[in-house]
Image 1 (cartoon, rainbow, N blue to C red):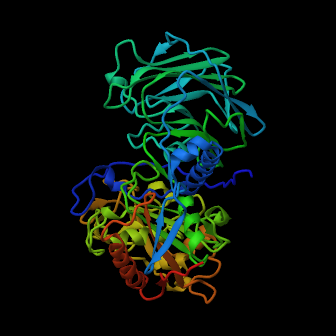
Image 2 (tube, helix red, strand yellow):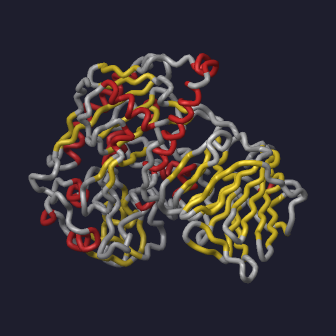
Image 3 (cartoon, rainbow, N blue to C red):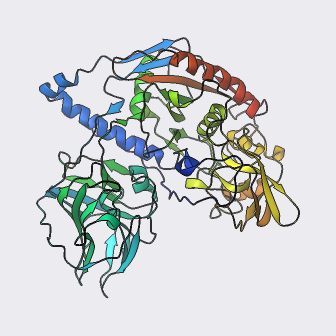
Amino acid sequence: MPAKRFTAPLVLLALSSLAGPALARLDGDADHWCGTTRGTLAVAVGVHDEHERERIRVNRDPEANEKAAISAPSAEAVGDIAVLSDDGSILTSPNPVDVAGIGITYVVKGKGYQVTTGGAALADPPPGSKLDLGDDDVRSVNFPKGFKFPFYTKKYTSMLVHSDGNITFGVPDAESTERSVQRFLNGPPRIAPFFVDLNPETAADDAGVFVSTSKTAAIVTWYRLPQFGTNLLSTFQVKLEKNGKITYAFGDLEADEAVVGIAPGDGGAFRLVDYQSDPPVTVTGGAVAEQFSKRSGLDDMGIANMFFSGFADQYDHLVVFLDFPQILLGGGAFAYEFGIKNEIRGIGQQIFDASAIAGSHGRLRSFVQMGTIGNYPDNPDTTFLGTNTTMDILGQETGHRWLAFLRVNSPDNPALLGRALSHWNFNFNSEASDMEGNRIQDNGDGTFTTVASTEGFSPLDQYVMGLRAPGEVPDMFYVDGNTGNATGEAPAVGLRFHGDRHDFGIQDIIAAEGARVPAGGSAAAQKTFRMAFILVTRNGEAPKPGSVEKLDRIRTRWMDYFNQATEGRGSVETNLVPR
């Protein structure tokens, strides 16, 4: 049976640093704890597809199947908590780097590429000139006159060469954030022979990044570069030919994790592959990559399918906690959500339905991955992550089913949007929404102060969720030209900044997105939402002492919190119904 495919929009995740004193904020990378982007579903489907192919390969190998020693599927109810024990369909195996010494070729075929593997000679010593690149650095390189490199639907006269084993076009992406499949997809058009955190600053004198160009080809070599903070050296090369052919050649690869592939950027389908067993592969219009990691990964779609093997298909959201430590999708997120289905118009999202891949027959709308339950305090109302309690985090992640994707005045104006274009802008007076932004006080002198954050769902949020009519949403404002704070920053209380106030109303949202259908506040709009709370354990392990009880406290408190956060307009049901 061919693997299912799903196309989802992907966006650029741009992070900036927050200036000025903060009375309540996060430190370092924890500023951006939520890993939700518009492309998270595409990544989850890609992981599930490849995991299913790997399980089929294992099942065809009696010796490997015997070594796996996988237990029977287990999905049982403990009160109103669904406890799932991995049967091999939840945790993916580590995928060590295995492309050293081989070549990978991408040849233009129609609107996509045909991918093959085979011997590709690695030029040693590397041809061309050495680029002056530091850690997390990028340099622009022009192609010779007459050389236009075709990549997906565009042709380019220059490339942006990054120290971290990749090339982008049009937009640099030299951030020091994780080198994950999500970043690989969510950025600009990218050619990634070996996307990993490399540091030319600590390389030997004869090592570095070398570029050679001619009228017919460009060659970039990353030569004996150490993985950041280690002595693990890797050498690899990419050749770009004038006809669009791309060839990767690999020498010694000591780095223990990387993403290898090509991506059109900002949209398209996604195929996760195993270069040792899958090619030849033809990919039409979308990205293709393999992610190498020394750690086990998580198959969220596998979790959903296991849940529905034991419980009725009657839920809008699946809310998942893990009873073991696990690095989540994206390489460091605390929690995330991805939409499974959307049929609502006028909320800034496409109409789509991936419910069948999750094991649902059209009912499921949202998958919420909350991560390790041990990361959360015993009291679900304790503030512990910036301005967030456990309830605030649940508010944001469940709220991503609808929020926050709205444009204002026109479809091209993302002034309300901040991080990953899926959270409210720091400078938007969101009335302290759980979806970020802040409650902002206008001081009347051209300055503004953030006075509250993450307190629930604003009137605008409630309109988008279907709980308020348009006429029940008061006018709003955002601040433009803020000289102190970036649009994508996490909420922070007590910050004073300068800027220009822009007022707008709900009709300006409707002008950009169209009217909500079904209409907000109408009888046709859903008001009660069914959410299942799930605890996942490792293969054959019982829940740790206290984990089920802790999750049940979260579940019970959540029902009250949601009702309060929506000002009594919405409610949640969380009881389990067997299949």
